[in-house]
Figure (cartoon, rainbow, N blue to C red):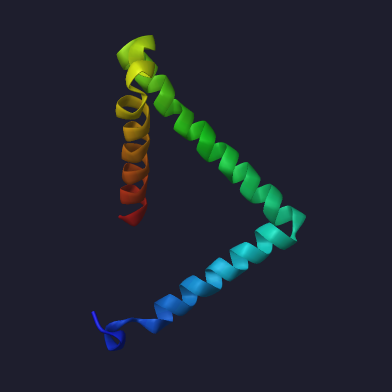
Length: 86
């Protein structure tokens, strides 16, 4: 892909959104609180992964933590992204 093929309008919107979110989070207490709440909800949602791993594999999953817990986390993120895309 060359520089001429880049959709600069999309790049500009992405940069602007990042700046707006950075300002909200770093400069306002409301933005910080809102994103902290959102982060807590995402952590709560991802904790269901741990509950599922414990249900399927039992307490012995700690011996193979990456294979059971972390890879399932990646799978959940992939599925959420896929559903949001469509």
